Length: 287
Ligand SMILES: [Zn+2]
Image 1: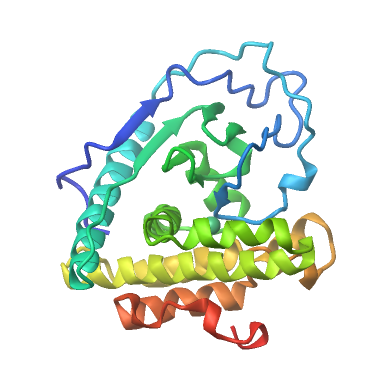
Image 2: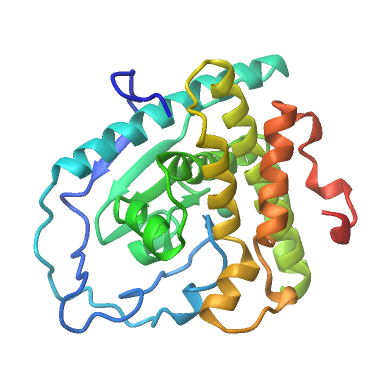
């Protein structure tokens, strides 16, 4: 992606220096290193796993080494800022085409753990969107996690992840999240999981719309779309369940399979606007 030297967003909140202790690799570190106190639904890039493995006891009384910014982190901050600005321009443009007005979201960058209006979150959960404060949360460690643990390489893989979370904000602005969240009280977990899959595939579609629009602006490199597709596949429920549980349980899908996620990303990419984004109008098996 062509991002160097381009204007960044003014909506990045840098909380790396006042986040909770990172505890990465320190004594007492467990997979995930802590948990999330869920006060409200949050919208992650990946599904219930590996979250199920995260012990709820946290190490919050211990203090980790304070955060020191590396050159590489400085570059990651710049990259995220430019991508966020691109999402602001793209969604302002698309909303306008539908006679709507886009209100921006903030990206909170933290280190280790962070307090959101939806609860306290740990880096290991991956990036998420909290509808209560309308903010996206991301630890820079996710860059390496996506590459090394999920095998999704290329900087546009991260752009896809941020665009997916911004997609949740777009859904929120359109009133979709609030409407669907009501259903959570009425449905069984198994039934609600299917609603969740539709919400998540729609966020992937919106990430595809974003990719299409910035390609029109000349900001994409030749491999970027392939990197985004591979990233979407790498966080598919079937892939993550196989890895963390050893077996695939379709009833527990919350985000869709690798195949579904990459297809909905491509659908958004090929359409380039809201016209085909209604994941709720299809039979579940046709998604
Ligand atoms: Zn999501």
